[in-house]
Image (cartoon, rainbow, N blue to C red; front, side, top):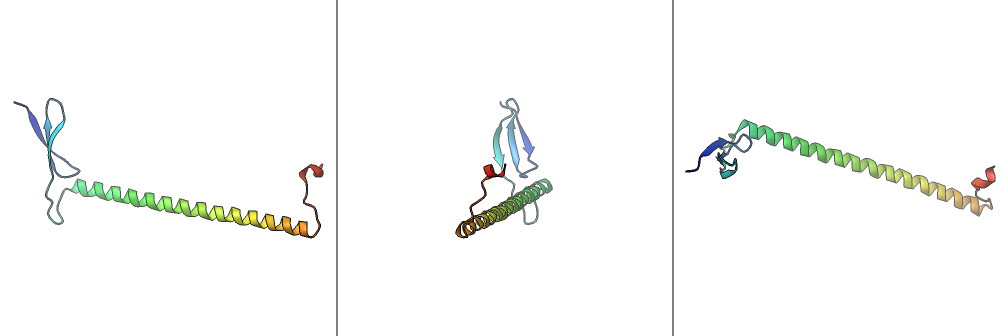
Length: 102
């Protein structure tokens, strides 16, 4: 006869049947939580996971927003330089050659 242990799971509030020799879970019964009931540890673990998920979404959104703002700033600066160079060429000025600065 196999020896099994019944263990109460603190995360899901269910019951696990564990084989004593191998340590493997042989059966799992989910807990029927009443409205507002359930395990305190399970609710706390779920709340922590939800907070971490929201924080990660907020961090990802803020990083994406900062990257987009930085990209727009760089594109705007590049466009301004291109306009200045075209204007200088139209006025007959020759763009400055870095090798001529010596």
